[in-house]
Length: 296
Image (tube, rainbow, N blue to C red):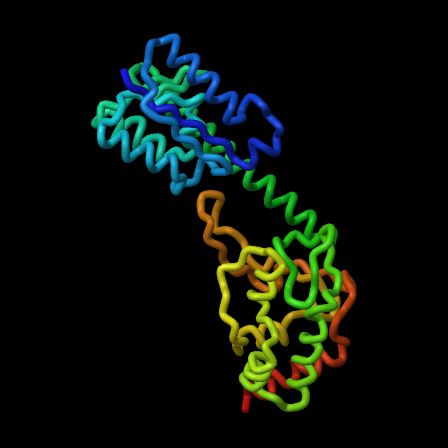
């Protein structure tokens, strides 16, 4: 009888330092189970650093495709949560498509076996518990991040143009801070944002995205031309007067990666957090001119 072995490890599992959850230990458990039951292993499907709520896991989707094509008859996992923590996905496959495809899922450590009709309520309960776990984990992470922001820790993956990230703080980047100063100076001298963008491009000043990439940070944007939107973002950014502003967006839910903007009244501001690049009087005069020019 052919079996597929599926293993998954999330970032949260690694952070817990739980060796029992490691891919290596999952494989040992499942291979021993296969050997003891005289199963033939068809293939291994392994997803590392993927949440159990993620529906776009590469190995997981390959597993489902092969299951649909009847490449094996049994899927072995350490437990149901390794397969998925998404209640909707668990119900769709464990009690819907797998029986139609003639696929049996076995959770070695939690006793899940889709061939056992009497175990359906247990599998549904597992699904609820797994989803509650993800919901609680997401809420705990949100509260921890909020606390860090309120205590002045910079939690972004990278700093804004003009600064460097250093131990959850922002320090001035000597390479790019002068460019930020020049942008404010030009604007107060009457240059339009388009003219400023053109001048920086002509001077071959690296755009924020390309500069980021040059410092070994992965950036999907590689446009060598400065844009009006980039200039506008810099001119409006309170970070340059030493104010740390965070919490501008939030995830729709723990099951959705999409982020939505939060009202500015809910942003977390920490004044005098880091060394300023722009003097306050220069920044606020710039804001006044931005409003006046917009009216005209």
